[in-house]
Length: 88
Image (cartoon, rainbow, N blue to C red; front, top):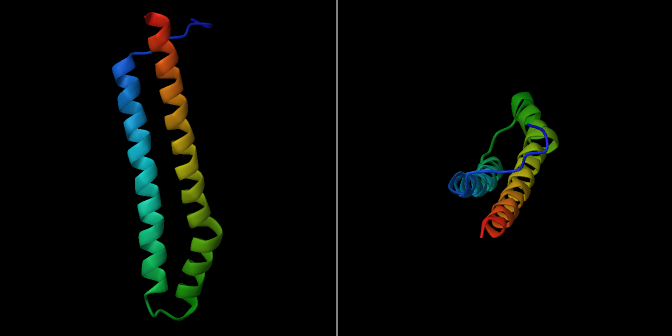
């Protein structure tokens, strides 16, 4: 099996759409949570812990996920196009 290249082109298009949609949802989630945190008066140790975790862990992880999904969508599209050209 090693060395084989191939894919079902329709499935690749669906995968790209899923990556694109999920990337957008990651951005929407970041924007929503950031806005809610900025717009909410919340003080105390729990608030400080969450805000610190959001800033140092959660938001950077979501940004990384968004970038990975965007990159993967582009790669899937390039592979789809190459396979489609090879089959023509």
